[in-house]
Image (cartoon, rainbow, N blue to C red):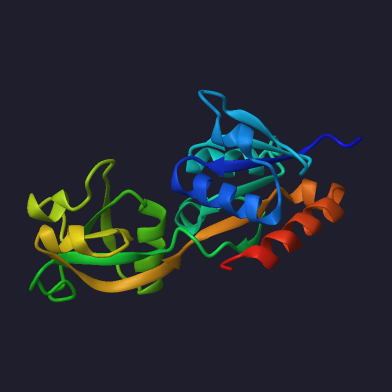
Length: 211
Protein backbone atom coordinates (compact mmCIF):
# COMPACT_ATOMS: atom_id res chain seq x y z
CA UNK A 1 0.00 0.00 0.00
CA UNK A 2 1.16 3.51 -0.83
CA UNK A 3 2.30 5.68 2.04
CA UNK A 4 -0.32 8.33 2.80
CA UNK A 5 -0.30 11.62 0.93
CA UNK A 6 1.24 14.14 3.28
CA UNK A 7 -0.44 17.54 3.40
CA UNK A 8 1.03 20.56 5.22
CA UNK A 9 -1.56 22.92 6.69
CA UNK A 10 -0.99 26.48 7.86
CA UNK A 11 -1.76 26.51 11.59
CA UNK A 12 -4.73 28.54 12.79
CA UNK A 13 -7.68 29.67 10.74
CA UNK A 14 -6.60 28.04 7.46
CA UNK A 15 -6.06 24.76 9.34
CA UNK A 16 -9.62 24.90 10.77
CA UNK A 17 -11.19 25.81 7.42
CA UNK A 18 -9.26 23.05 5.60
CA UNK A 19 -10.28 20.44 8.19
CA UNK A 20 -13.90 21.61 7.80
CA UNK A 21 -13.56 21.11 4.04
CA UNK A 22 -12.04 17.62 4.48
CA UNK A 23 -14.90 16.65 6.80
CA UNK A 24 -17.40 17.84 4.20
CA UNK A 25 -15.67 15.53 1.69
CA UNK A 26 -16.14 12.68 4.18
CA UNK A 27 -12.73 12.31 5.82
CA UNK A 28 -12.55 11.60 9.55
CA UNK A 29 -10.40 14.38 11.02
CA UNK A 30 -10.93 13.52 14.71
CA UNK A 31 -7.18 13.05 15.29
CA UNK A 32 -6.48 16.57 13.96
CA UNK A 33 -9.27 18.15 16.01
CA UNK A 34 -7.96 16.43 19.16
CA UNK A 35 -4.30 16.95 18.31
CA UNK A 36 -2.97 18.15 21.65
CA UNK A 37 0.66 19.05 20.92
CA UNK A 38 1.12 16.59 18.03
CA UNK A 39 2.20 18.09 14.72
CA UNK A 40 1.87 15.05 12.40
CA UNK A 41 -1.61 13.48 12.42
CA UNK A 42 -3.50 10.85 10.44
CA UNK A 43 -6.75 11.56 8.61
CA UNK A 44 -8.83 8.38 8.67
CA UNK A 45 -10.49 7.01 5.50
CA UNK A 46 -8.49 9.39 3.35
CA UNK A 47 -5.01 7.90 3.12
CA UNK A 48 -3.83 11.35 4.22
CA UNK A 49 -1.40 12.57 6.84
CA UNK A 50 -1.60 16.15 8.09
CA UNK A 51 1.47 18.18 9.07
CA UNK A 52 0.77 21.42 10.99
CA UNK A 53 3.22 24.23 10.26
CA UNK A 54 3.72 27.97 9.96
CA UNK A 55 2.81 29.45 6.58
CA UNK A 56 6.40 29.94 5.33
CA UNK A 57 7.31 26.40 6.40
CA UNK A 58 4.35 24.93 4.48
CA UNK A 59 5.95 26.23 1.29
CA UNK A 60 9.42 24.98 2.33
CA UNK A 61 8.09 21.48 3.12
CA UNK A 62 6.19 21.23 -0.18
CA UNK A 63 9.06 22.64 -2.22
CA UNK A 64 11.53 20.14 -0.71
CA UNK A 65 9.13 17.23 -1.16
CA UNK A 66 8.77 16.21 2.50
CA UNK A 67 5.08 17.07 2.06
CA UNK A 68 3.22 16.32 -1.18
CA UNK A 69 0.59 19.03 -0.81
CA UNK A 70 0.13 22.24 1.17
CA UNK A 71 -2.57 24.73 2.06
CA UNK A 72 -1.24 28.27 2.35
CA UNK A 73 -2.36 31.85 1.77
CA UNK A 74 -1.65 33.55 -1.55
CA UNK A 75 0.17 36.25 0.47
CA UNK A 76 2.88 33.74 1.48
CA UNK A 77 3.07 32.36 -2.07
CA UNK A 78 3.59 35.87 -3.48
CA UNK A 79 6.26 36.67 -0.88
CA UNK A 80 8.23 33.41 -1.10
CA UNK A 81 7.94 32.63 -4.84
CA UNK A 82 8.89 28.95 -4.57
CA UNK A 83 8.94 26.13 -7.13
CA UNK A 84 5.67 24.18 -6.87
CA UNK A 85 2.30 23.96 -8.60
CA UNK A 86 -0.58 26.13 -7.38
CA UNK A 87 -3.61 23.97 -8.18
CA UNK A 88 -6.70 25.63 -6.80
CA UNK A 89 -8.20 28.55 -4.92
CA UNK A 90 -9.92 27.19 -1.81
CA UNK A 91 -12.05 30.31 -1.44
CA UNK A 92 -11.52 30.86 2.28
CA UNK A 93 -9.06 33.12 4.17
CA UNK A 94 -10.06 35.99 1.88
CA UNK A 95 -8.39 39.39 2.29
CA UNK A 96 -6.34 41.79 0.16
CA UNK A 97 -2.88 43.27 -0.09
CA UNK A 98 -3.14 47.05 0.06
CA UNK A 99 -0.97 50.12 -0.01
CA UNK A 100 -2.01 52.45 2.81
CA UNK A 101 -0.80 55.79 4.15
CA UNK A 102 -1.79 58.50 6.62
CA UNK A 103 -5.24 59.89 5.87
CA UNK A 104 -5.01 62.96 3.67
CA UNK A 105 -1.34 62.48 2.79
CA UNK A 106 -0.62 62.76 -0.92
CA UNK A 107 1.34 59.52 -1.23
CA UNK A 108 2.10 59.92 -4.93
CA UNK A 109 2.96 63.63 -4.60
CA UNK A 110 6.51 64.97 -4.89
CA UNK A 111 9.63 63.40 -6.39
CA UNK A 112 11.40 62.06 -3.33
CA UNK A 113 11.95 58.30 -2.90
CA UNK A 114 9.14 56.94 -0.74
CA UNK A 115 9.80 54.67 2.24
CA UNK A 116 7.50 51.66 2.63
CA UNK A 117 7.17 49.57 5.79
CA UNK A 118 5.96 46.00 5.36
CA UNK A 119 6.16 42.38 6.50
CA UNK A 120 6.22 41.48 2.80
CA UNK A 121 9.31 43.12 1.22
CA UNK A 122 9.20 41.06 -2.01
CA UNK A 123 5.51 41.81 -2.62
CA UNK A 124 6.13 45.52 -2.00
CA UNK A 125 9.25 45.60 -4.19
CA UNK A 126 7.54 43.79 -7.08
CA UNK A 127 4.52 46.07 -6.85
CA UNK A 128 6.49 49.31 -7.02
CA UNK A 129 8.82 47.92 -9.71
CA UNK A 130 5.73 47.23 -11.83
CA UNK A 131 4.92 50.95 -11.46
CA UNK A 132 8.48 51.96 -12.31
CA UNK A 133 8.91 53.49 -8.85
CA UNK A 134 12.04 53.41 -6.76
CA UNK A 135 11.20 52.89 -3.06
CA UNK A 136 13.09 52.19 0.12
CA UNK A 137 11.68 49.19 1.97
CA UNK A 138 11.81 48.69 5.74
CA UNK A 139 10.87 45.23 7.03
CA UNK A 140 8.66 45.27 10.11
CA UNK A 141 7.73 42.20 12.14
CA UNK A 142 4.94 43.59 14.32
CA UNK A 143 2.18 46.16 13.76
CA UNK A 144 3.06 47.77 10.45
CA UNK A 145 0.50 50.55 11.09
CA UNK A 146 2.93 52.11 13.58
CA UNK A 147 5.54 52.98 10.94
CA UNK A 148 3.72 55.94 9.29
CA UNK A 149 2.55 57.18 12.72
CA UNK A 150 6.16 57.25 13.94
CA UNK A 151 7.19 58.80 10.60
CA UNK A 152 9.44 55.85 9.81
CA UNK A 153 7.66 55.40 6.48
CA UNK A 154 5.47 57.23 3.97
CA UNK A 155 3.22 54.21 3.54
CA UNK A 156 2.74 50.53 4.27
CA UNK A 157 2.03 47.42 2.24
CA UNK A 158 -0.02 45.02 4.33
CA UNK A 159 -2.93 42.61 4.40
CA UNK A 160 -6.28 44.28 4.87
CA UNK A 161 -9.43 42.41 5.83
CA UNK A 162 -11.95 45.02 6.95
CA UNK A 163 -9.80 48.15 7.11
CA UNK A 164 -10.84 48.83 10.73
CA UNK A 165 -7.29 48.75 12.12
CA UNK A 166 -6.17 51.23 9.46
CA UNK A 167 -9.05 53.62 10.22
CA UNK A 168 -8.48 53.41 13.97
CA UNK A 169 -4.85 54.44 13.41
CA UNK A 170 -5.64 57.32 11.05
CA UNK A 171 -4.55 55.48 7.89
CA UNK A 172 -6.42 54.88 4.63
CA UNK A 173 -6.06 52.53 1.66
CA UNK A 174 -4.41 54.25 -1.30
CA UNK A 175 -4.94 51.26 -3.57
CA UNK A 176 -5.44 47.51 -3.51
CA UNK A 177 -2.59 45.39 -4.82
CA UNK A 178 -3.92 41.81 -4.98
CA UNK A 179 -6.69 39.54 -3.73
CA UNK A 180 -5.61 36.85 -1.28
CA UNK A 181 -7.16 33.53 -0.29
CA UNK A 182 -6.03 30.03 0.68
CA UNK A 183 -4.48 27.99 -2.14
CA UNK A 184 -3.70 24.31 -2.61
CA UNK A 185 -0.09 23.81 -3.69
CA UNK A 186 1.64 20.59 -4.81
CA UNK A 187 5.24 19.40 -4.97
CA UNK A 188 6.49 19.16 -8.57
CA UNK A 189 7.79 15.56 -8.23
CA UNK A 190 4.73 14.36 -6.25
CA UNK A 191 2.51 15.65 -9.07
CA UNK A 192 4.32 13.29 -11.47
CA UNK A 193 4.65 10.26 -9.18
CA UNK A 194 1.25 10.45 -7.47
CA UNK A 195 -0.77 12.25 -10.12
CA UNK A 196 -3.89 10.07 -9.88
CA UNK A 197 -4.17 10.38 -6.07
CA UNK A 198 -3.55 14.11 -6.13
CA UNK A 199 -5.98 14.75 -8.98
CA UNK A 200 -8.61 12.70 -7.16
CA UNK A 201 -8.13 14.74 -3.96
CA UNK A 202 -8.22 18.03 -5.91
CA UNK A 203 -11.45 16.94 -7.65
CA UNK A 204 -13.10 16.17 -4.28
CA UNK A 205 -11.86 19.49 -2.88
CA UNK A 206 -13.17 21.49 -5.87
CA UNK A 207 -16.56 19.74 -5.67
CA UNK A 208 -16.92 20.79 -2.03
CA UNK A 209 -15.54 24.35 -2.06
CA UNK A 210 -17.90 27.05 -0.92
CA UNK A 211 -21.02 24.93 -0.71
